[in-house]
Length: 138
Image (cartoon, rainbow, N blue to C red; front, top):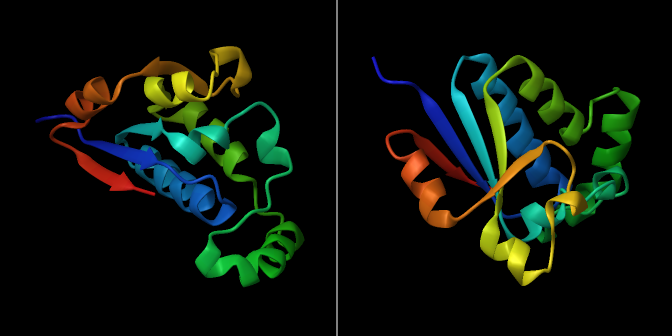
C-alpha cells in the first residue's frame, strides 16, 4: 500500500487562511498522512520570526470579520495557527518547506524564519514529492 500524503501550498499570510491551512494540516497529520506545507510568497512571509504573534490580517473578503473572529478565538482559548502546527510537527509527519524562489526574491535566509520551517526547496522538487497525493492551495 502506498503512503498517504497531503501537500498544502500556502501562499496567503492572512490569519483566516493560516488557520484553515493549519487545521487541515493537523487533521491530516493526526490521520496518519504525511503532510508537507510549501510556503510561498505571503504564506512564507507569515513565517518570519515572531511575525505570527502580531498578525491580525484577514482576507479582503472577510476583513470585516477580523476583529470579532480574533476576539472569539481569544475568548475560547483557540491556539494560534503556529501553535497548532508546532504541536502537529511533534506528534505526526508534518514538514514545512520554504520556496527557494520566494526566499531569493525577498532576500530571506533560514535564520529569518520560525524554526518550524525545516528546509528551502524548489517548486520542481515540491511538485515531484507531492505526486500521487492530495494537493491543496490556500
